Amino acid sequence: MGRVVGFISQKGGVGKSTLARALAREAAAGGLTVKLADLDVQQATSVNWHRRRLDHGIEPRISVEAYKTAAQAIGAGQSFDMLVVDGPGRSSRGSLDIARSADLVVQPTGGGVDYPSALIRSAWSWPACCSRDRRRRRIRSNSASIRRSGCSH
Image 1 (cartoon, rainbow, N blue to C red):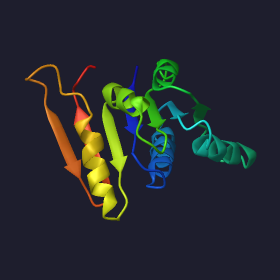
Image 2: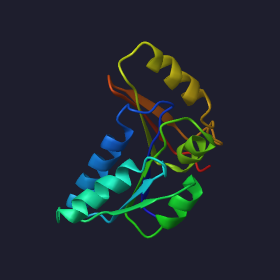
Image 3: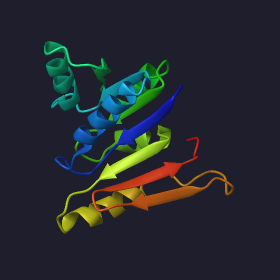
């Protein structure tokens, strides 16, 4: 299996789907085989984006599907160079499953006063690494918090 990049957030409308689609598109344009997994089956933002791209013949072609669970998405991404997981616009057990399985977790935040506290609450729910010699690194920017983990959960 290739790399797994998960986009999660406790709130909707913070740019998860936009960033997930941009990464998937750029990785595919760079020659990687990419699967974009949309875990918000009700809204299906990434699936609808994919349909519009197909209708207009926009390249590069990207495999996009909706999944009910993170486990289903991760299982389907086995044969791709990169699996990009577009999580739902809420915190759930699935968010934790994405964080455990991902090589990189991107957690976009908005500019409001409520967003940093939601980010902190969500980050505390991530698993601690099993081994002390594995390193965790967090990088923060104005619009996203990114966690890279060697954790094999």
